[in-house]
Length: 192
Image (cartoon, rainbow, N blue to C red; front, side, top):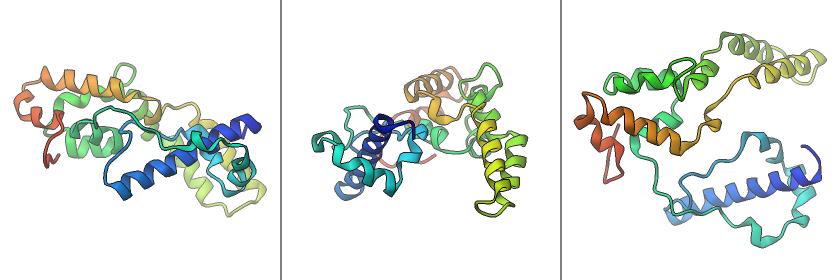
């Protein structure tokens, strides 16, 4: 992955992510509601890379990421984690005001929707899964799929603060504003 400095950065981010997971589950609270492990660093989530770089890390840098931000509102969290097809199926019937988020070219999640609904991605993925292991054909098919996917924008590229603000704006301006209000704030036992 991109040389020693990039590998060290990736290993550090991965270890912080592991500690974030452990703290969340062991302590019962989340140290940073906006933490994301960058997809670009996925190759560093490897025992070989970690073993190669771990001795170069400053232990004080491996602490779990922390922030004082509030958790995402339930409706925002649901939109952020669910596939677009499930948002449309599960959320849009009661929050039709969110449909504009997915409009191609203008909606904040328009490119995310295009990526998730891409027929070429589905075709290329099927070709990759139908070809076993490490053959030249399989390697070529994976490379073509990855090159195609790089043309898309996925949810990782969407700033959560912008998503939260846009959902808040759309809901508050909608005829369903009163019914959606409880889903726009964190509180006890809110379900979507």
